[in-house]
Length: 351
Image (cartoon, rainbow, N blue to C red; front, side, top):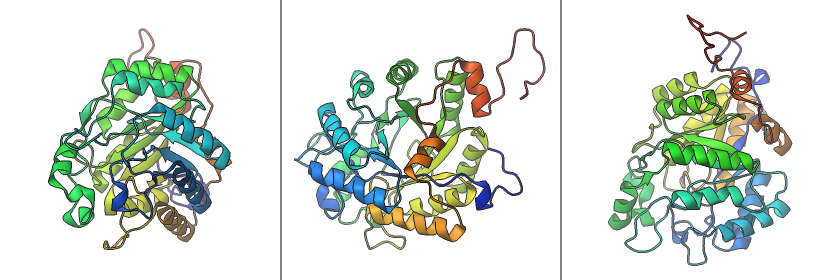
């Protein structure tokens, strides 16, 4: 992304899109019963509270009544139907992992099978977005967590830490291409969850080959343990490589969430918060709800003079519903240099 001299002036920035992830599939309800929903009514109320606080994108997981993350797509259909009535303007974004939480004591924390995740393209009512991972990688969500982060929670249990430490994200080339084909055929926009520049380069190659032809909404996921960590040098290297026509959100975990989001707001990028990413207020020791985290970001944005997007404006910024004809149009719309034509030498350049 290119920053002009006036790029940090709020009047030259898109309005802020706030994504909230308020369903915390890695936590047990007892870890934060005031904020982690259990019943379907509580799931819906979380969305309403976060929307009223200022969030316009809802990252969705579902919990069963036994407290475990749901693997049943029927539960997602039920929640999506309820959400379309309760928060009709919100962008509904289903988490592509479905739920990575262990299914029972002694079970592994793992993503579901390729075939099961493909079924997200058949959800009814369909979501606006499904998140998609690129390139199989380690996903050790415990690596950056401090003893203070997990004190008094289920993640203080050694057996649970052990299973999350060994978790991997299955996202090989064949699965990715098929998943993109199914999502696009269903009219669902993929939201790319990327943890490093090599994954961004893979997305660019998919675009150059015409496998994906649409807007590029990316979240940089800096959670360590096989992903980038929330190091500003990692962040700025990634930001620099994202094309100007993309929409970039920054995501990290625990008490790094607020400072990384503050940088995103200042730079004209977009933010993500919620109990899936963090439970703690800035100085630790006190928990903070998902809706409170949203209000916190709204206050930071107001202090910096950056307006928060309405739901309609967020849809326009994300280009929900847009598709492009081919690789050439996609490259041009996103701000990538065009593909090399036969016989062309030297560097390709924008027209």
